[in-house]
Structures are given as structure tokens and as C-alpha cells.
Length: 422
Image (cartoon, rainbow, N blue to C red; front, side, top):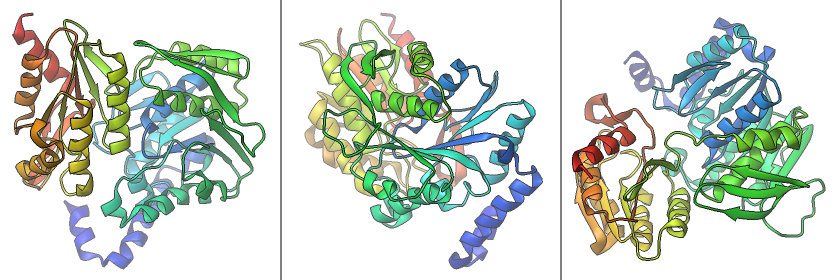
């Protein structure tokens, strides 16, 4: 409450200085811990959490002690705690405190998810990044940043800051040219497309194959297997391989790490397998939502259907994408159930109606998210796939008055499925 009051009192022109000051104070209080670590920052619109997880596994397989901070969890060595903040990137004091813990635990590396909101609020400042990477870039947080170009420039500030470090970049992203222009000691580039490149030493994935349980691809003369769904995860794997290469980790070690990787909670997570499949995924952008539907469409049986349960990721932000979500769902899914999802101070039914406009006649509007999940389970037939998006494994639903209701889509699915007595 004190912070909110201060933000209201301080003129907007001074907010940046306010955030920067907090970042400096946090670093001072905890003794600038990042100077004693090799810090890797992963930014982008989609795939950050998975890339952080895979990068940690690669470094651990090489024998290093690692700390990782993501929207899902904070892991320092062998100790892990859930990220209950409902923030991708912790606040300045929490971030510096976690880095201090990593130093005390004698970690060599810290792998961080870096969000555009975090950069906007200078949470990345006074963190000595050695390696930074870009997963991809698409429209997100547009209203908060005042347009896509501002959003892109905000991401660019992270790379601009790391002039003496290594930049890892996705050559297949249409905005990569912007990030290539930032100076760095070294650049490691990756691609998953068969195309002629004007760059040498590019890490390229070839012979990509996707099954109902894993991905296979080759890099150089190494055959990789990744037990995750969705071809988009090839990019997350490539990113992690390149992060490892920046520290001298061999392809062989990365291959072993990726082969042993487990699914990331709330990311294309299969919660129920029979008699129908229920998948929970975060998917909060149009690009990620469509990739999820594409992947599952390719896995379903010939006569089975996709059933979607979705909302819009957070009241008060990115309203433009609500009807787009509905339209995408209607193209891929036989049934579209639109429901509540972190409305904050907005009227949840108004959000649902906006998503429903895009879905058209297929839209089935159910305010109560538990009821919506129950409806999807009751409607599903043998072989169908239910895909519940927007929250993943988030532990809260945020509603009016700053209230947080304990929530977990996966837990709700299991509870309601049990009631069916199938």
C-alpha cells in the first residue's frame, strides 16, 4: 500500500528515477551479489520460463551449481520454492536477496527470466549480466508500453546494457535485426529453418520431428531428443544449447540434459490422459495460443475434437487481443468455453463478452472458471483434447479490491474429473 501511495504522489516524470533508486538500494543492501555470479538473462515474449528451465539443466549437467529465477519458481542449488508473487521478475529487493542466497549457496550461475515490465521499472539494473538471450518477440504489453516499437525498445535496453557480454539471438525472429545492432563481445545465433544465412557459425536445428510425447532434431552431428510437446520448444532447446555453448558446455552434455528434461509445470502439461486428454498451458499471447492449438490439432485422433477453455490474461491490459483470442480458438476448436481469468478491477463479464465476440457462435460464456472446466469435462468424448489456457500453474486468481483467490487450473481439473466417476 505504501508503494502504491508513493507512486500516486510522485509525478510520472520522476517514476523512472524512483524505480532506479530502489534498484540501487536493493543492490547496496545485499552487497551487489551479481558481481560474484555469472548471470544469464532470458527475455522475449514467449518461451522464457521453459528456456530458463532447460538452460539450468544444461549447466547442471555440466557439473555446475545453478540458481534459476522464473515466473514459476526460484531454485537455488537443490532448494526450490514456488514463485507466489504472480510476477515474472521479482521486485528489486527480492531479486537481490535471491541473488545473495545464490552466492551463499556457492552457485556459479544465476539464470533469470527478464520481463519488459521488469526492464521498464529498472529491476534489471545493478545486476551484472554476462549473457543475455532473446527467445522471440510479438505483440504483448502494448498498452503498458504505448505501442510495439516501445515494447521492442524496452527489450533492447537489456542488450544495450550488456556490451561486454554475450548475446544469444533467435535468427528466425522477424525483429532480430534490431537486436543484432547492439554491440557485444560475442554473439551466438540459432535457427530452426532451412535457409541460406549471411552469418557464420550459426547453431542450426535440422531434421525436426514431433511425436505425441517428444521432439527430435539434430544439431551438427548430434541427435537430440526432448520430451516436450510442440515444435516451438525446439527454439527453447536451441536457446538453452547456445547458453551452454557460451560457457563452454559441449553438445554432448546439452544432449544428455535435454533428453532427461521434464515438462515445465503449466506449460503444455498433460493433466488427464484417458478417456480424453486435458492439457493446461499458460499461452497469454495470440502467437503462443495458436501454436498450442496447432500442436494439439496435430496430435488428436481423426474423429476427435479440440475443446478450449480460455479467458483474457488480466483485466486492464492488452484489451486489443481479446477478440483475437476468441477468433483463434474458434478456428481450431469445436467448442469454445470463455470464462473468467484474473479480471483485477475490470468487470469480468465484459472481458468474457469481448473474447466471445471473436469466437462468434461457438462461444459458450461461463463466468465461474471452475464451472467452465467442469462443463468442458462433461462435454468431452473419448479421444477429445481439452486445452485450458491463460493461467498455467499460477497459484492465484486476481480479482477486484486487490484480492487473490487461491487457484490452480490443474488441481481444479483433477477435482472435477474425479467427480465424473469415469
